[in-house]
Length: 117
Length: 138
Image (cartoon, rainbow over all chains, first blue to last red; front, side):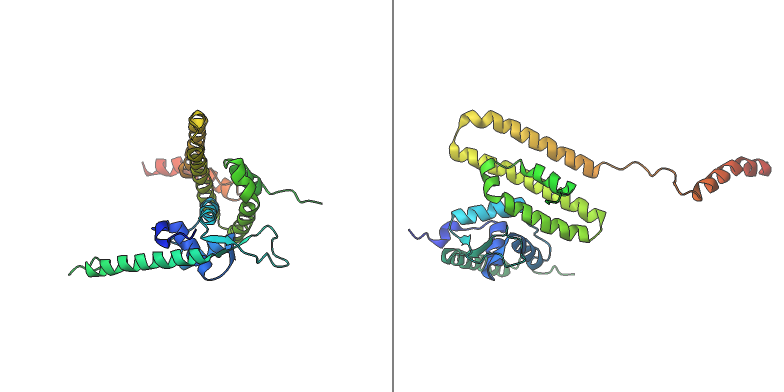
């Protein structure tokens, strides 16, 4: 039974950034950690426990799945690659729209207006 | 011949024991793989502060998520009888976390006298000469 993407919102910070990392392509655990650190300029650093707990919840919700792409020759064979499912991509899109609306509201309320000197 | 695991890896394996067995069964290999790669990158920096931050971050992350995993498992099973063992588990985790924090932020003792064979005699000579200088001004 297909689930409505909106039923998964709002996403936690870790889940949002993991889905964003996987939107760029299949990745293994350490690559996801590195991608999140780089894309947030070090503001968000996922620990190993947070990463695998989040991956487990995303797997259970069918937002991601194990990729058929296995580790290449010379790579650590313990690595598992993950990828977004179609539902995961729709949820990421819905979350992005929600955040866009939040940013629009922030701008409309002039929250980020610089104070007069 | 299998290589002997490093002390860092053994300590990390010990931390992983905080997780429930079924979670560890599913993710232990990947957790070890991620640790080896990230610890390798941290070691390459040759920065003790970076290593300390790495261990604090990793330990806190594992203990916190292990407690959360156990709590959510308990909530799923809805077994009241396990609450006592959970309370003990939380106490143990808190004690470990408190201990790690104390070790990290406890001020180190001031450095002792230098062990440098040339510096030590100089310090002794200066101390010995001090009373004579003071006495000569009177």
